[in-house]
Length: 332
Image 1 (cartoon, rainbow, N blue to C red):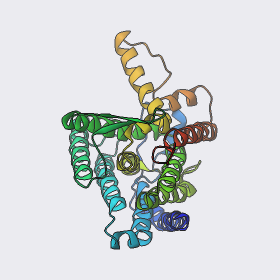
Image 2 (cartoon, helix red, strand yellow):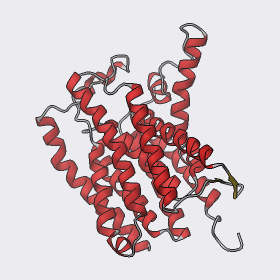
Image 3 (tube, one colour):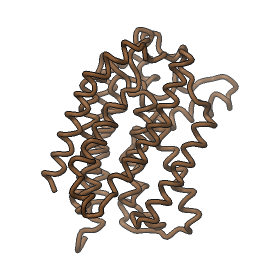
Image 4 (cartoon, rainbow, N blue to C red):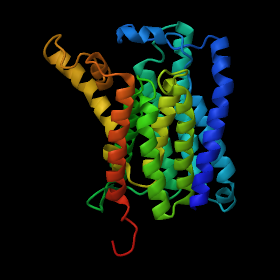
């Protein structure tokens, strides 16, 4: 199994890197550049026009590895990795529509919030229903660390699942805003899922997690500061969908809280800013939300943000691994 996971990582890394070499010049030619937030840090203005939709790199890398390395599993009738891939690709498609609208309008505004929310909720419910139908998850809510499961009514579980999926996808989107940041903090997340899948013997899921990790590594070759391409909503939505797919396919959605700690912090920093602004009629608790922009305005470089946030993500990935690894191990 370790060979399969290593192969998935390698194939995805190679496809992602090669796609970047071709896609970046093409996006420059068609002027598919990112429109920078007008209220963002002033030094971000120089990023104007940097190609976006770079999530295509790791989406293609992940897809290629799933089909190439996971072919043997599919012949045996195991399609978990393909279901997860399809789910992430559909979310990536929602992000692509958003990016495309931004390019057409030549500003940092794409689909409306209600349009995105409706699409996300529908996709989330359909995915959970299909995974439930396929026997990949139960309506029992597994509690990490405590190693117990709490049964929930089906309707409650579906509502909970939709809330978690939509919230996570948008939290990942909040994390994307500094060169390399979202991809960097997501690599330890993918590694943790791959490690747990290896211990539990979930080969197909492990292949998917390793492929995602390889695709992100290939993308970082071009997205690390100074970025030559941004993942865009295409990438952040695909990535959010991929993380949720892994958590639900392994029947442990609550692991997203500690494992995706950076996503959670980034999202709540934005919600805190909005709530405080409304409550105080115009005052701000942060210089700018989400948190990474506040730290930028406080003097942090993009490189420091990448290193610190990725380091925190790695620490919590280790904690999360030990929180769940013993779930199916005999005598533990």
